[in-house]
Image 1 (spheres, rainbow, N blue to C red):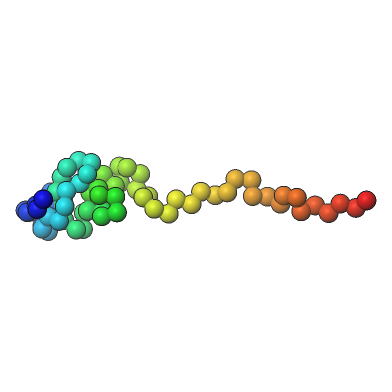
Image 2 (image 1 turned 180 degrees about the horizontal axis):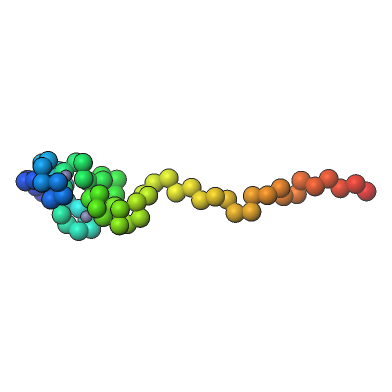
Length: 69
Ligand SMILES: [Zn+2]
Ligand SMILES: [Zn+2]
């Protein structure tokens, strides 16, 4: 499927693809290829598609005590 026309977000650049969520056709600047979403939906969807590094819970010293008998 080929799309043509102007980006629905900036009305300036040529359309490259359609958003999977809202269906708007957007330019390369407003299309996030990895997720298939426009930048508008990307923001609404949480913003961070990659780099989800949760801090490890309870990362204290564990089993490093020295026992003296
Ligand atoms: Zn645009
Ligand atoms: Zn969208």
